[in-house]
Amino acid sequence: MLLEANIRKMLVDGDQWASWHGYHIPVSEQYFVIWTPIGTSMHWKPGTWIAHKHQLSYFWPAEWYTMHAGYDEQGKCISVYCDVVLPNSNYTNTTEELIYTDLYIDAVVREDYSVYTKDQEVFERAAKTYPIVEQARRQSFEALDWLEEQAKIWGGPFNSSRVNYPVQTLRTCIPMKQPVCCRA
Image (cartoon, rainbow, N blue to C red; front, side, top):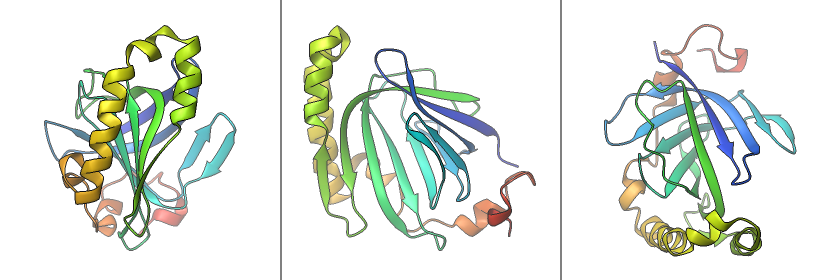
């Protein structure tokens, strides 16, 4: 049985932007993976919706990014979203709550594996209001540039995610209180 975990996405002003529930996939001691099955409630500040894809969220202690890979019902990777974040060294394979602070800029991989970056203007606005964002400017944009480069060659942290993932196997490892749509 997989250990449960909650993920909380925070903004630099201390507000929670999003939260959701998932399950630890103990694949490494260097990074930590949380699986969020299709059918999970995703609570975001603008509203709540039900996940229409499986998601594996990857957390690396003390790194400037986190990664969320989306998979369809058959386990094919259909998207990857990398948040540039403030580093956090408190992650483990048994952490019950994984909290990260978003620095607004992102690298995104589409279903066709094309790559783009976004929200640089949001970063610029935040940097004018929150000193921590301005202080993190160099590291944030270095991380963003590196993530974009690595995404194009499926290197670095993208080596951790798979183009195909055995979601059917994962379904057998979660508690029976899983959403009805996810039961094998």
